[in-house]
Length: 280
Image (cartoon, rainbow, N blue to C red; front, side):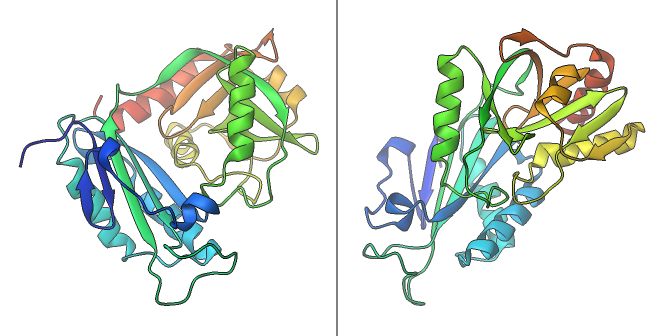
């Protein structure tokens, strides 16, 4: 089979992304009634696939969405699909919605299966920057931020606000404490200690956050999982923004003021651990 430049999959049908058609009655369309995951593909291998599948399963369980197939089969399908691409380095997205049915706030009947949508596109490679600019915004999201749902309007509005202010990311603040970014986790380095918000309903359990904590363990770097204030963030030696597609971004400006950039050696050690794992 000829390799594809980009790929979309929907309930067994495979096309180019722009050719894929999804029913208007898919509940993801009018309720955002679904979950999603994003993973990076290096040399046709999905990085941290088991972590993404575990989080997918957890999100689905909390929203009472039945997986369309066992998570192991979803993993196998994803691994097969990335092999159909021309590029060996890919951005891989998948989402599962509660099914296709006439609009009704109540769940559809038991006979309505969930929908699985997947797409993959070429990716330029690992994103690591020392030039990140961020701004704080009020966290107005709901109280289920630990579920990776497609309901992301507050995140979208915050990200756009940041862009219009000349920033790369918005950092949410709730009740006086930093939670996370609009599409990332936020961590600090202070006096050689890695500090990150504990896992609760206010933050997404980020896969890169998980791996940075693991790397810290390998390197003997102390870790504190606790909430921190915007003032603590401003005084940190380093502010690290992390996500699947941007695993290590050093913040140099916060709300228009210079911050961080005081412990490049420790950041390099964490980055080297990541690059070693993906074979770069």
